Length: 265
View 1 (cartoon, rainbow, N blue to C red):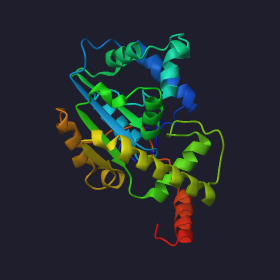
View 2: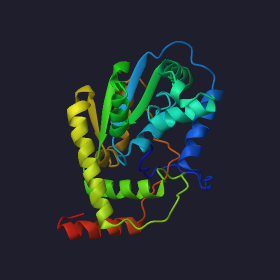
View 3: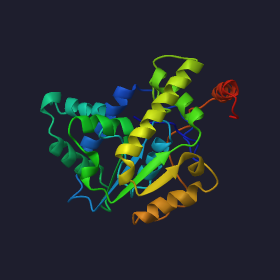
View 4: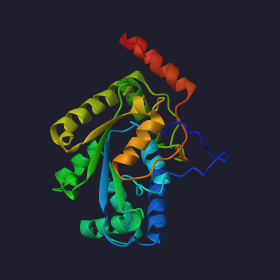
């Protein structure tokens, strides 16, 4: 699932058509199926491990737009896998993960041989329950994406989950005012995810990307460092079609909740 989107230097002036999360997945796989095959196996495999609303969608979309980093998305979410199966008229009970992985390698690997993917902690846990260890794919580089301000992350998580609008192009199913009790509940979920990663996935990670650092003045420097680590050329500017979702009212609500907790926003 895609998470919070951040402001960019280049944004389309036109309002894109809003689609549901399910429709977005279906369109993704339709586009991928129409892409020419990449010849040969990936020469470099990269993974991003994250929790919801940590900025992973923005980062991965920007990397996708370089044309050097594959097409990183949440391909190992069970919802994504089932969308691929539906497109190919495969019963969910008959999904062959080797065939699916072959499809991903052929359709999302960039010309320089880079394959990349992102996965949330809960998606890793669901695969693990089915006897599948995601990291057995043998990644050359694994990045953990995290966020310091857990209150803001929890608020954003609650709003996205309640509206099902995970990125700027998603059509919300409802208009909500996030309640303090809901922020508390999603804070607990984030704490549980952090505990899960400490116990199960942190040992696979080579580097950490912090949301607050990445949206700051060193954004381009950090971005180009990621590219350089994986043999990709530097860029002079980051480009993404994603737009910021947070509103001034959201910031006021977060500040009020933080005041209620007795902490600074």
